[in-house]
Amino acid sequence: MVVKPAEKKRLVVGISGASGAILGIRFLNALKELGVESHLVISPAAEKTINQETGWQVSQVQELASAVYRYEDIGASIASGSFKCDGMAVIPCSIKTLSAIANSYSADLLARAADVTLKEGRPLLLVVRETPLHPGHLRLMTEAANAGAVIFPPVPAFYAKPHSIEQVVDDMVGRALLRLGIDNDLYTRWT
Ligand SMILES: Cc1cc2nc3c(=O)[nH]c(=O)nc-3n(C[C@H](O)[C@H](O)[C@H](O)COP(=O)(O)O)c2cc1C
Image (tube, helix red, strand yellow):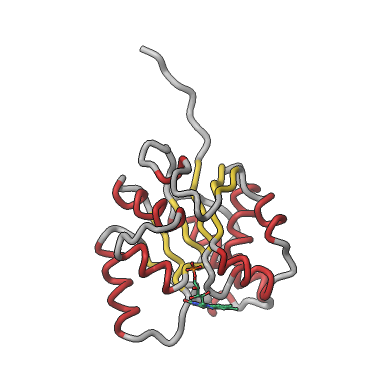
């Protein structure tokens, strides 16, 4: 019998064009700090939000990841169930991308990788950011949840008494990582 050494954790990360690009950036940074392999796909709309909302260049965000894939490259390795990984996070997740995932409308690599994550029974975390929500949004979230996704809206933990946006972001990212089974000390534990 051949016993393989324990493999490094590996996550697929999608950044879509909802507000909160910094959440995806901090998430990637945390994975790097924690030694978790990250496989990144960024939507064209997310390139806009990265530029509009943060001081980061898209290329700098890509440098945080272990591997980067083109949004249009639906033949990339992460589009297949044979790509072994520990799950995927879409952070932040727009309503458009939520809709694509909920409907298995896999016309781009981000939605396809998410659909593959679900069909392989791996954890899929959707950090859906929109407000207010109409019944169609709520229906899409229910459909995605019924298919196995975890709906994880970026809701601040006010009881942690954050003093800065950075603290709020770290808390959300820490909890998102924890929900994917990756322990960390970014979030405030309630005692
Ligand atoms: C600055 C900015 C902020 C946006 N914020 C949101 C948002 O919070 N939620 C959302 O669903 N769409 C938001 N949008 C709209 C999406 O970017 C748009 O629907 C886009 O087509 C989503 O494409 P994607 O899902 O492929 O990234 C925002 C757009 C811009 C430019």
